[in-house]
Amino acid sequence: MTLANYFDFVILPILTLSVVLVFIRLFKGPAIVDRVIALDLIITIGIGIITVYSIRQNQKYC
Amino acid sequence: MINIILAILSTLGALAILFASIGILRMPDFYLRLSVTVKASSLGVGLLLICAAVMFPGDASVTTKAIAIIFFLIITAPIAAHMIGRTAYFIGTPLWKGTIVDELDGMYNKETHELQSDPHEATGKSTSSLDDQIADTEDETR
Image (cartoon, rainbow over all chains, first blue to last red; front, side):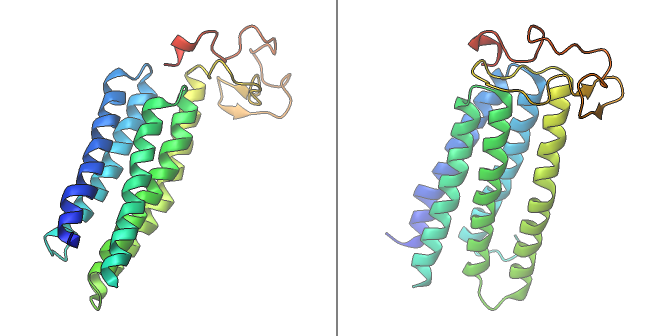
């Protein structure tokens, strides 16, 4: 398995699953602060997804 | 050789982020959720950014940007977590049912937002164990 396939078929699905799990908490969180930290975590995971995308596309301006 | 380093770093980073999101879904309490997510997600994104810095060797701009992102993430994330947790305590978010001790109980003056070391100095709040913030049932914090 090449490194490109590894990023495409392992790392990015793990990050996508993470975003989905956090979205469940964002929708059902009992208090408003639960939703706030869920949004904060979604944005942090977004930084990671953009990083993996820039690695995968060989774009240096990450 | 560099492929193995990249695979190991990205796997660790992705698993740390996955554990953070499982923690925010499964932990029984807002405060436990907060303590799980911020640390684990900072570690995970930091490892992914180090992975990007290793991916483009000899390019100083990528390394500088990755270090800058990690630096500002490590500066800002714990401060944001501290302020969100403090706000949550002020607005009365219940603690988990199994909480043994709440050391802030009765110490905050909720009018002026000052922290006292003696519960009698914080006005307007009795120190009885009946009106504390620890939840009575599991459903309050779920």
